[in-house]
Length: 106
Image (tube, rainbow, N blue to C red; front, side):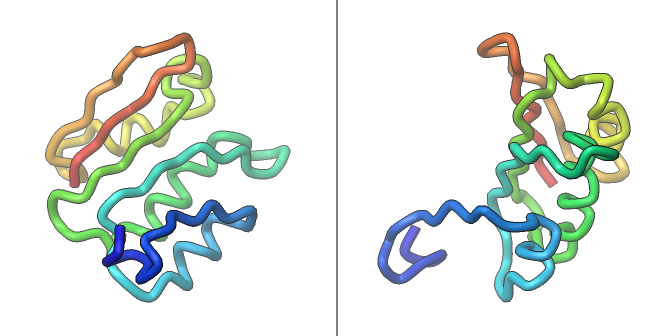
């Protein structure tokens, strides 16, 4: 944690995730997605966020995408992208509750 923030404190931001990722200066080794996006995209914004972060994510980075079960239809483009071996080394849907968590490795 201290590599991310010298204080060792994790920060939760209430802001446009695409903008935050775009402006983030360093590498992103763990990306947790639980965003609602605008009315048109909703959870579909996950793919936009990931693709904006992609070049900042080194090999082996982990992406955690919440709502992979209960919002699977809305996340179909995201799920297809992370499950494509040309994009991610591995991706698995972990069903720990009714909402699910897609865990993907770059």
